[in-house]
Structures are given as structure tokens and as C-alpha cells.
Length: 166
Image (cartoon, rainbow, N blue to C red; front, top):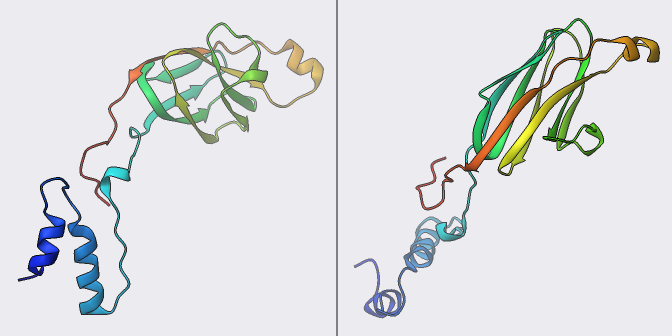
């Protein structure tokens, strides 16, 4: 028998479930001489998996696909196809200042890509750009790039209470 009757009685009493991990770890350590540690899956929590959104910056507008996802982590994969370097900012809808942006990419050169990750709460957001380079006069006369809208719905399901795979 793997467990002594005393160990079995302690581990499997009716007022307490579980505990086999500690006994198994001790036996592995005795048999192999390798130090073992026990992780209780009840304490391992993971949020929803990130959703990848594709952002395309053109000379006239920002395109976003998809335009609606559930709350949780979102990774923006940004491609700048505009003629000038552009910075991407993510702000709550209705706010015009990028100073309070949830995230921004910094300058993205033409034909280059960037990534930014945001953990969203439900609501509506605007994905906008600003010209990153050039003289002040060039930036002042540059035609603005029309931003895109993003809707964040209820939270996505998480991996809680699911088997965690490596």
C-alpha cells in the first residue's frame, strides 16, 4: 500500500478533502532524492487568453479588425502603411487628448510594425494616430488620419477551473 493506514486516515477524513499532493511529494522525494514542491491548483488563476487585433494605419484612416471583443487582455498588432511615421494611441471614446491614453506605441516608421497590449474593461474606445516626425509646420498642416472605434463587451471566459496545460 502506498499510504500507511494512519496517513490514509489523516488525508481522507470526511471533514477535509484533498492533501494527497503533500504525501505524494514526500514519497517522490524519498524514492528519488529530488526535492519536490506542491502547487494547489485552486490557487493558480489565469485570466482570459489575449485576443489579437490587427490595426492598419493608412494615409487616410485607421482600420481595426475585429471591432468588438469581450473585456480582458487584447494585443494590438499594428502595421503602419502611411507615408509618414505615426504613433498609435488608445483612449476612452469621447476623450480627445492622447495625454490620458490607456496605451500608445510611440513612433512607428512607414512599413514597420509594433505591438501593444491592453487589459480592457467594458466600454467604447477610440484608436487614433498622431504624426510622429516632421517639423511643427508639417505636423500642423498634415491631414489627420481618421481613427477607428473599438467596442469592449462583457468579460471573456477565463481559464479558471479548467485543466492548465503547459
